[in-house]
Length: 238
Length: 238
DNA sequence: CAGGCGATGTGATAAAAATCACGCTTTCCC
DNA sequence: GGGAAAGCGTGATTTTTATCACATCGCCTG
Image (cartoon, rainbow over all chains, first blue to last red; front, side):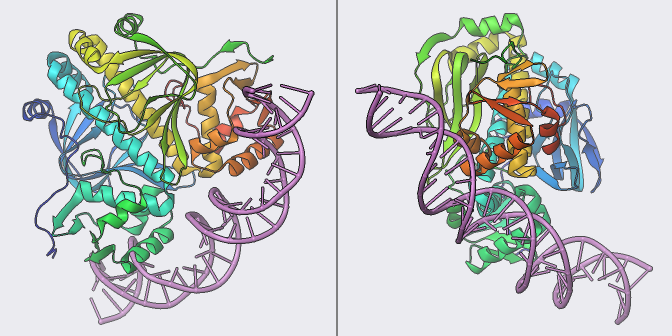
């Protein structure tokens, strides 16, 4: 049992929507249960849906010809994701893999378009949300390119703590079990490298493990390695 | 002189706007001349403007504490860029450096917001544009993370050819002089590594140089290295 | 409870990329 | 046109990261 868990501090990526507008979005979605291991969409599929993750965990991935895979995003309860360009006939460039049995709300592009036409203020919040998501991608891009693999890992741990963290005192527990391989695929490294880097962080007391969950003990150390600028938490996510 | 130049094939990033709406945007911008080496904005500045690059060249960069720099985007004639989230009080995360004397159109956030409120169809095209820019970032991110430095360089050359290419026969001339250091900063590598990789490509006849401009001789080779999926040209940009 | 399997941990080695060093070339500009 | 500065090219070396190989651990399942 996780004796560290007290309160979920992780933020959603829908902070920019008002209650009202989030409600309007919820009215046009239909609920669906999806099972672990299945895919919401594949690269190449027509991108005509938006997804609201009511409960569960979903990752956005890309696989190379040699079978290496890259995890672009990982979403949790309350996150909105999917094709980011409404009104644009296009195709998914990534896969959406269900990591745990999940409940999602599906929004059809057509319905979203209608809603955006009807409610100018929702359209505006939607733009805010799109902008925020883009900045999230940009800052992650920077973190993963500029500070070597250790920097990429530290940035990822910080982002995981913002997305899925529960804090108690100065500790933050990441409430998602992650394998070394998953972490590796998030930063474009190998499992072995991640394993060694995590060992180093453990030796330094920067992180600890409890029950295969990662606990961040020294956030400042992590922030230092990837030159964290204390961006808003709803932007600094995984 | 460039005897290869015949026709500019490079696309802008404003393909998703209709003539009419682009015109409306132009009406609310005011023209400004900026000189090489100056900055349109710095990280930390309030992000309250959108820029239309009428003529010139501007790059979006980030500098690390140790002085390493990373080039996130490079814009040319006809490109629109800047803070991507209207209606959102926020701060730039990157710098915009003027690479050559340029003429830009500046759009104030307030004016843009008014225009978006007034014209639903513009708002929708604006969302399309935001989505397109985000996908551009995502696909570049993937290219730079998944295929090693050679893959990153090949992807960058392809993107440069889409942004700034002029084709004649099967050759494509990149109409922007780039130093090895600039290319290095675009892919998170060192000047020396870029130099060696370019030499290799030259030996293989994949590229050639004329007058310090890069000419792509064998696009298929480049596409192969970074597993190009032939995304639309307005998305596959630098 | 035994066997299997996915995950972890770690050494040895190889490959990739950065760093250092330095000479050469091109460009800029006074 | 001459000198400085910026950029290029390339060896030698070091650092970083991946690859390979294998032992172990924990947990699920029959």
